[in-house]
Length: 371
Image 1 (cartoon, helix red, strand yellow):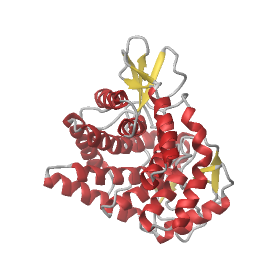
Image 2 (cartoon, helix red, strand yellow):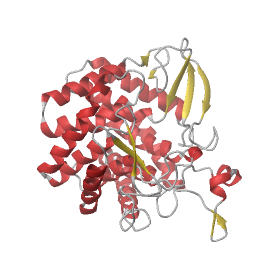
Image 3 (tube, one colour):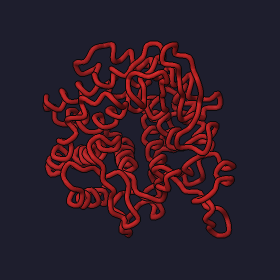
């Protein structure tokens, strides 16, 4: 936590106002985005987490100042990522401060997200305008529907909860394979709701398991079960978690995609040899997301044996991330963690990721049974 404070304090001084870090460059410094990027809520969100853990007023002030430029995203209806942006910032800020204006921003954002729902498909649209023949849903969206669950509990209509619940069940049916692994992208016919294709955007191929997508599923299904107590979602969370635990390497930090054959058959970046063997980039952010999700699932599990297994796995993952291999301490990197893979096809590997840092801090807080 002390190291995280130092890194985030330096980030706060180096990132310009109304700009938001996404990934680190080769120099170790942050690449910035504007408020509309899906990653923009995670810097103020990480600061709110530090305020929760340390109770230092400086982190409350920094978080409030950093999230101010995100208020306009409450009207953003062109992406599902309004959930990522506002749940980690304004919704968490309201939880910690009780300030009514923070609650109103998050509620208006939930309304914008709800406008992307289709009853024919049974899900909220991930990408593209609300009109259009093709209706795309990505597994990442399991995280965004948390804003709808939150909104329905804090003054929004009950319909938002029903939308989020239906979306989770649709994702369980169409994104999760029988063995518990996940597809990244599913396309539907917007008019009929018929499934058109399953594919990937960031994985090696349509049938592979992109590690961050699997981590989103663990975290997202656990959270959806917490809100609904629908045992179908509990079983879904268990399935994707068990698959993860059977396939992660010994140090609990996965390759960017679990399909080793697809990786080794690929060209370019993965042809780098380390000790005479092809080097597979890891994704520390996927490990952080999964660790936080596993700890949440352990908290929700009534079966003591399962709860113990999930908690031990979550804590072991955090311990691995805190080792010199994955913690950026002693390097020029401004992030807390490194060895993240933002987008393999674009060459964004071996980098720090602001969302990896956020979920690492969330996982640490959950390990301490604080949230």
